[in-house]
View 1 (cartoon, helix red, strand yellow):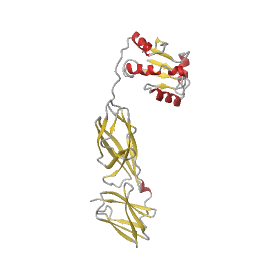
View 2 (cartoon, one colour; view 1 turned 90 degrees about the vertical axis):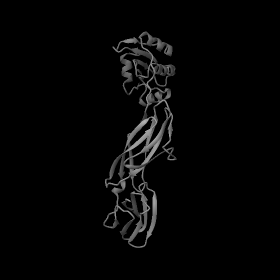
View 3 (spheres, helix red, strand yellow; view 1 turned 120 degrees about the vertical axis):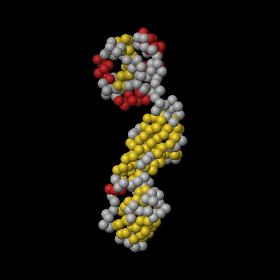
View 4 (tube, rainbow, N blue to C red; view 1 turned 30 degrees about the vertical axis):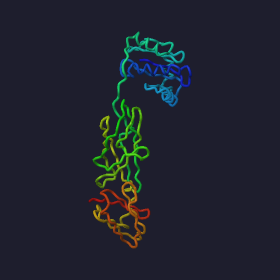
Length: 307
């Protein structure tokens, strides 16, 4: 194990960092014989995270919050930076690699017989979450997922689909369809996902799968869909809506209907009517199969169209 003891904000501790990160890469990125890490006795979690971000550190960093000061005192460490090489039996191979340069680190490794290795290539995409949350009401809320390319090549999104949901995935604030999008190595893509069930089952919560087919492999995310409108639907003693499911038409009955609006499951207004009496008939023959909402003032009722 090679440990770099450092002080956050210390210019002397900053000097060897490029050599430290290069040595980490030369010796296999913690995937082979030598494990790299660093410990700070003065930096809290946020300061150590800023340090790691500044130098692109990929190996573990222990802050004062994680016990860094206790470790430094127990060894003890007299000054910073101090780079130590520790054998598997916990004895010191080198208590102070000085000066803290790449050349001296390599010399210390050679003295212990450690060989250099290529860093492993991670051929995969990484997703910020494994479950997409979608909601249906008068306005549907889409969910966002961040896709990071950890491969060494450009990754193209070839196709996406869902057996249970009509879905649409876009990026760049919804201006581009996800199909055909390319993510370059070490870059990320923030994707917006919306959708609604292909078949309404009557359940307020429905689960399904979003399948992503990419040039780096196939991936599946869970979709959780909740009908929020089910919580504040109109009392059916005042209004009635039939037939439900509907095919060619649906009839709405109730007192003082006034303005009647129809929304699809995406919250998009389909049509608006002014009802002169207590009944209105809505032609649904041109509607796609799916879930719709009728809004009368602040009251709502949902119905399903099946052709």
